[in-house]
Structures are given as C-alpha cells and as structure tokens.
Length: 369
Image (cartoon, rainbow, N blue to C red; front, side):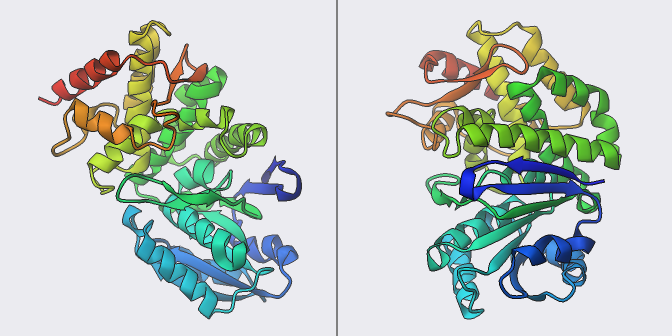
C-alpha cells in the first residue's frame, strides 16, 4: 500500500507518493498532470541502463524522450546544466509540460534547477532512485549545481509537481550507496525525533538488509519530518536550517576530497553529525553519552563516523575551517552550526568559539595519524 505525504505550500503544494511498484504505475501518476501526453526525462549513466526501459513501459501511452548524463557529483556543474537546458529546448519542452528528474540527488538537483529557469519555469516530477534522494533532496524544492568555490552555491527554490519514491528501486543500490543515504535518515532522528532514532536503532540493521516494509516506513517518516519543516520555512529563513545538521562539516569534507568517490555526500553527513554532537558536548550543551550513542549506531550500521575513515590527505584544521566559511549558511560573516542539546533536540547557532572548533578539528585530524 502506498503512503502519501502532502507538502502544503499553497499554490505550490504537491504529494510525495511512497510505495512499491510505482515505476510500473507511472502513467497513472503522471498522466493527470499533463496537458499533452509527452514527457522529457533526464537520467544518468548508472540509472538509465537499470531502469529507463521500465519507466518507459510504466508510462504507457505517454511519449517519452530522454537524455542520459554522466553519473557522479561532478555532473552538478555549469557544462552539464547548460547541456540539459539546451537539450530541453531542442525537445521543444513548453512551460506547461513536465520534465522528469530520474536519478539520485545529483540528477534531481540539476534537473530541478534546469526546470526552474527553462522558459522562466516549467514543472518537473522527481522520481528519486536512491535512499538519499528519496528521503531528502527530492522533497522541498532546493535545486542547484556546485561551484569551484563550494557545494550547491548556484541554484533556486523550485518545488516539484509530484514525487514518486519507489522503494523497489533501492534494491539495486550498492551497499555503500544505500548506507550513504541512511546518513540522511539518521539525521532526521538526531535533529528532531528521539523516538525515530530509537526506532532506527532497533530496525536499522534489518532495513539495511532489505526489509521492504521497514524501508518504506523509514522513507515515510523522514519525508513527513522534512515536509513539516519545509511547510514552516520554505526558503530556509529559520527552522529549515535544522535539516543541515552535519552538513557544515560534511560539505567542507566533500570539498576537501574533490567531490569524489573518496567521500559520498551521505558519508560526509554521517561524519558531520558525529562531529556536531561532539562539538555540542564540548560546549556543554549535551551529555557525553549523546555523541557516543550517535557514533555507536552509525558504526553498527557500517558507516563512516570519523575523519580517520576518509582515505587520503585532508587539509589541516585551518584549511577545513576556510572551506566551512564558504557554506551557504554563513550569515553576516559568521558560521552557523546546527548543534544539539540531546538526540532529537537540534538548534541553530552562530555562537561557537573559534578555538573550540579548531581544537575539535585538530583532535579529529590527529586520530588519523
């Protein structure tokens, strides 16, 4: 049975449909949105060979044209953005048409941004194919590409018209990619729901092993939490910044590793969450047991939790802080951190002493020796 989570944003409201077999039922989900029976699909070289034929079959009488881009974070760049926009124009995509982003977070972010500027804004549907995209990047309307200066610094808020999260697609993920997505799932419990984190501690291993019902429930609860926050703060003026728990550290680490396979986004988030709780404990905000519990669960799931889990060289503490200073959450020249008073009790602050932050990173780097 499908779960439906509504994202209530007035005229920009939409539904996130979560269930199994959604790809086979794509025509029923998408046809009511169309003015003419035609869609333009953008995917990547990993997803396309696995699932594009199934999507074409599921669309039934809807005509489909498709573009396949290279896989990987480096695709979120001006050259591929330009290529996507020009291809959509070549396909004569009109303002009332639908563009489908069919892939993980990279494709979703890039295609959503392309849709936001094409003819000053066309509608798009997200069909996320990774756990990370299903629970996070496909919902909420954040779209964009990376700059040489930093991650996601070029983009727009452009809400999708519908999101189809097919749990079956998660079965083709490599274990590392699935666990990277789990970093975002754990984040939701850590930032706002101790009971969800409890649930994950009990059910995480079976979920990772492939239990479909547990996977669907984890996606549903994550999406519902994100929808609730986005409804309160669509353009990240306040509460929505909580969704960036672990990201200030994580984005700096992704930049330091060149947005490469050395560190996947969700792995950076996992390490970042552990560091955020460690920083919170050092500032006397939470008990010592909290960061220990965070690390224990992430390690039990086989995830990265420390800088020592990243292969290769990293900048020193000052270098990492410089990378953190390029974060979108910098306000009035001050870094904003999402810290916690305990599991499920995150908050946003700019009041982090520079020496405490530097010492934390120096200690984390020393553990790599």
